[in-house]
Length: 349
Image (tube, rainbow, N blue to C red; front, side):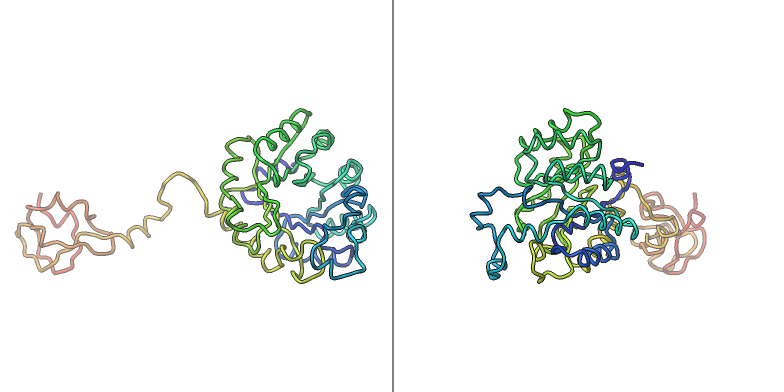
């Protein structure tokens, strides 16, 4: 079964642990992250495929103002040196892919150039191509990857609805396209009030494609809120330690948080159930919890029943409360002690 059909039939969110650059350029750290993601219950680990040539322009490196506070404190780092340090060579990506295969967890990466996309699909045989939000309006790149005959997972951060529509139309202009759209807000971390989880419903109404969510909020609560929207993919940044030096550690889920997301999202998927209102309880449970008509006092044979002679108590093994109007004014066929559950045999016709 191909990835697209697998996702549509899972019935729960496919959990992607977004490692991104949280490996900090270390293969050993990457392997530790993979094992912890697997242990936490993730279905897939995702990395990012880029080099210093495929992300920023020369002008951006010269400006160097992209650095965050924790980088500025280290005088030995420039933006270019960080990008070089945290990039993964093709050889490292090969090793990471093989390590994932050995440990039975899916692997993919986000390519940032045509060369990286070719390597991801043709050599690494990734199950899907993740398009970063920054490339949603990179229409030449979208056309290129749409020709690869792989499922495209499209993040929609930074974009308005018209831009999303144009990106989808660009992919649709090619043959054999398969699209999964992720609601996303590219603010790190995303404040709860800007998460706009209801946009998942909006995307589903507009586009006839599976909808997922790429979560950049802190903690796990918003991820689980999105899971209640019947998303097909849930992507969350992942780290071993939020205090670790690096790009996204602070906004990433820890192993404990990811485990909660994985386990609870599965529970939520089961709990959503059907929209049909039916009673799933067994007849035994119903009888145990419901009430029957009982005598509120001792009643003698031949007594004409009045409303004050009756009460309603558990269990519901006798006449249900709804039958009271049918027995008022009728007579008792035998002596009844107080709190006796009435049956039809106790009432004269």
